Image (cartoon, rainbow, N blue to C red; front, side, top):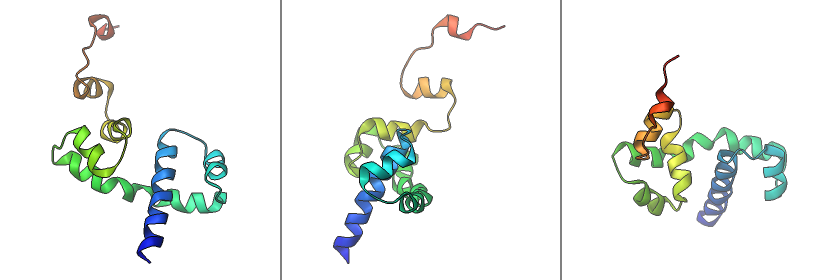
Length: 106
C-alpha cells in the first residue's frame, strides 16, 4: 500500500505542476496517459498538495529551503508564494525595483 501511495502522490504532483504552468487539461491527460475524468478527479484534490508548502511559507522559511524540502523547483515555489498577490507585493518579495514611470498617475 505504501508503494501505491507514492505512485499516486507522484502523479498528483505532476498534475499539480503542469496545471500551474497553464497546460490545458486534455494535454496533461494525454501526456500522462490517463483519462480526462481521472485528471479532473485529481485536480479537485490539488489544493491539498500545497498545504505543507504554504505552511512553511507562513513560518518564514526561504524559498530555496522550501524547494529543497519538498522537492519542488524554485520557480514553482515562487509561483505558489506569490499567488493572489498584487504586482507591488510581488516586486517587493522578489527584491525587484519599481521604475518611477511605472507609478505614473493618470
